[in-house]
Length: 549
Image (cartoon, rainbow, N blue to C red; front, side):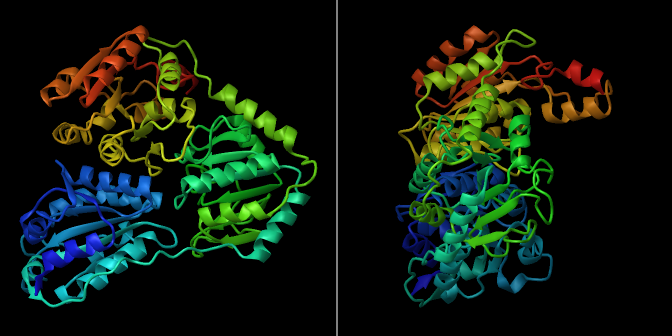
């Protein structure tokens, strides 16, 4: 006889869970008690949105579901920010929500929410466990759903009285991963299409990759001398200094790369959905019938043909597809080798940061210094804002599993993602990029890093404005500034008050020694960069945007 709380924890352990994030609540005290001597590490967070984003970061960096636990009502709705990220980014995650007692349903009891109605849009599956004997069944199914096909978040709600109920239940077993493989006839068709092409282009994206799959993809690109781009915020899927790398297919795409994609006669999308951001507002590839021949490789058949009608649809996980590429042969003299080299040269030029700009701090030399003084396995995290352009455009990612950033464009993600990444990989350096507006969304999780001794370094780009919105505002309503100016705390004092290390950078030359001191401190750190608001993008100022409007 075991309680529902004990059965939840046993099912998590059976499925290999080593860590969870949470904000505690009285609705699931029985689970917290069962975790007490379980050996599962519990990261106690300060806001449910941050806790959910930490779980997303774990799922993003491991491919296994990140686990988050929150209480009912306000706790659950706070966590929905992380759910939305996981849904749009195809990240495996399971959110457990403490729920009201079963005998109180449909009365609008204290903090009552009917989650199957409220969260269906945010999750692949929303279930409620009404019978503790079915906990092994529900939890095993949650892992299977979260990881199969197109991965995503699952929500399981746990009625408070069910968790204290003592029952007999079967011992939980680990879920069985499901892999989808390309068929031999499909790979032969792809080989034929490549041999007939003159201007092929590969675009990588999505999830369900691995270090081995990335290596397979790079080996294929070397053999075929084919250009390869990475979808928005999936840049870690290809070495940026590999001679086949053509650049990131995302917001503010290199015009040369955009033109090359449109002029390609064959596009192979591997794991990528090519939604609004990577497709430049659905303009790179015509809908529903692309002007280029299209091969779409995706692990979920419901995505194939949903937006773009492919000439060849391959229902396969990226890792399985990349492995199968070993068995197809390139033409003796690929017609596109010279084009590939030109595209890589264009990327190198595009990703060389400018050295000048308004104000006393220049972000270009800072990015160059970071690339020269950080290891290839350093993990970069960020949320959303114009500041992130400096990472996406100018940092040259070299290895798999070094990027955690929301393709959904959610602010506040970078800091909790960095905390989770450092907990997962304590031996690796983790750098969070944040804007002042972005940081304050979940800045309270800095204390979580302090509590657990996780020395992340946050590079906080402070221009005292919601920069992206201000940029659009100046373009659409020039000179009429409304609701985009910010008043900020002293971020150095903030870091120190939380028990961390703080640095202020007001000149470009200040950055390198400030970073080295932060690194040497052994503490979670904030390096506040005072950036002139005019430096709204790497190449354009607010004044230029206003005048052009």
